[in-house]
Length: 458
Image (cartoon, rainbow, N blue to C red; front, side):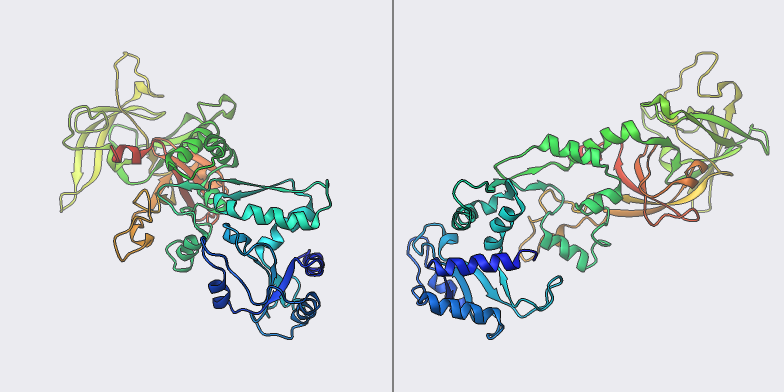
């Protein structure tokens, strides 16, 4: 809109040079008169006298005509095999208030006319477009040929393939439907492939740069595996994210031989990838919570987590052995009674015995509640557009793309700020959400520790 005046002056210049004319074909008539790739088109107004076109264009600008009753067209080649070159529209009438210029203008330049000229005004050297604009390049160049002095620096249009990801859609039209029909919670929903959505989910700028570098620039459309994007954020957060303990599906454990009322502080490493991040102290007591998935009453072979009579290592703490399983009236496991070995503080045994399983935990007394949003892929089909007959991409939405849990996390997370990233040990990477408060912590799962979809698809 900053260049409306200059664009108008250039349009008048083209009319005076016999390279543009005012046409009054309706949109339907204009389409019918454009011809086919094998047959030339025409317009009964193509040879309209220059003075008449100048007068009509001025009156268009002054608001004398209703919307779409007249257009200004470039006079190029109605027999061109490139349909974009068949006297494209430069201006149309639209009586609508512009958000910057108000009601000053009622004629507006079309994209193909404004594109190259705006680039020229701004001193753009390379205009980067997606492949569908390749057929527009001759028109981009034609307009510049008319206005740019010979030898003057001018922009050049280059095309590249659109970046497409599987298990998602990148079309703005489709993304808009997801937002407006409330399949997602706004443009920054962490499931959306928008910059704001990715940022809220916990993707860092470095991970996005790394992803773009790995994908590169292509001249052929292709679909990038979402796992590559996830690999980039895992690699980045593995170096940067502080490690913490959190339990998503809590199962209570009572350590029967641990002293009543005692709480001790155990040293935990903040980030094994970066010694400069130091250590922290986490509280431990008689009652703790572990993940429900870390206990099986009747485990299969090679199950190294907790089960009746077996010993496991509590991360940063002690070896414990399950002695008793407590169930409710319906037979559901609600509590475990275990014993601990005081000599194994820190996770090592003085007698050298080996324990294969290590599980995470939080102190029942000191843990704080947190809302955890487990985000997954928005669609359950690699190509969401491959829908059954009579259905569209929405039929392939993943009903489990968001699961909300009330988790228990270690007390150090009480000071977490929005966009802070953490690795919940053995679970995944999480980012503190913008809706989080000290009274109600909210964490978004950025990505799991491993590519779970790869396992599912084997």
